[in-house]
Image (tube, rainbow, N blue to C red; front, side, top):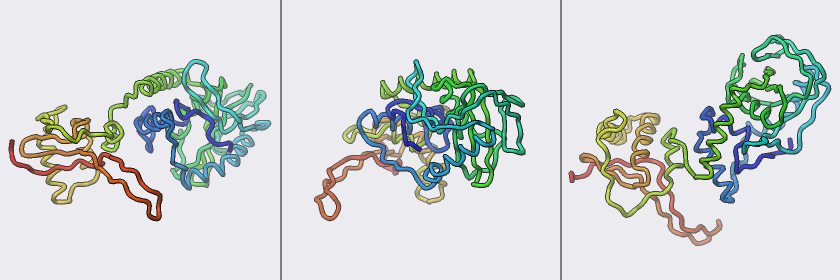
Length: 319
């Protein structure tokens, strides 16, 4: 395991599921924001977790088992990234297996699954990708569990075939063999081109959640007249929405998911505005200002401002 090889300022194979809105862990805006931070010279502070640590430790073991089951003559771990010849896209491969006319048959009993065929003949090297999950075994892995990443790896490396080895719950290894897929590669190229355009323009995607709104509009104008909120948006009665939010907050009965959905709608309406008004309600999404702190035990902390994460709704006198 050689660590990260790709450039954090551009798209890479591993973040494509998030860019394409197919990741259960990150939204397109999460990923866009991380790349923008890298362009601004800000380090990524996430150091991984126990799951990623085990994935790294078991990667060589999984790759070697893939090589053995597929009858390959050996493998190596590339020490540099592969760059696409025309797109701003990079890929690092867990392994490259050596093949010389290997005929591989679809054989679920041995954990070998060939996507779209019953057998393949490997006349050249094959890309190898290792995954670890607690999920139940799949007949085809979820798009975010290797398939999209693998197609991008093939695009960048020029290889014709790739295999994703998924170890399920530490108990069952399944190897999924994929040929290059021109249709998926076209979708990847479109997603990468749009992602790079958004990076250059610093243009975020439409928010996917309330938390996403915090990324798109991190700063609010504190001194301004309240924004007059629309009565309706996209068929949704905004006043009814706010009344529901207010009632749910006061009664503490709203589920987190319902309140998050309401927050997202209101944040998208407010945008860079910190205050809005509709009917008898005032809606706030303000900045929080933190005073500078002198050094005590921890290092001194400079003053900073950060927008609060949740919408505040309170009833006020009519205008």
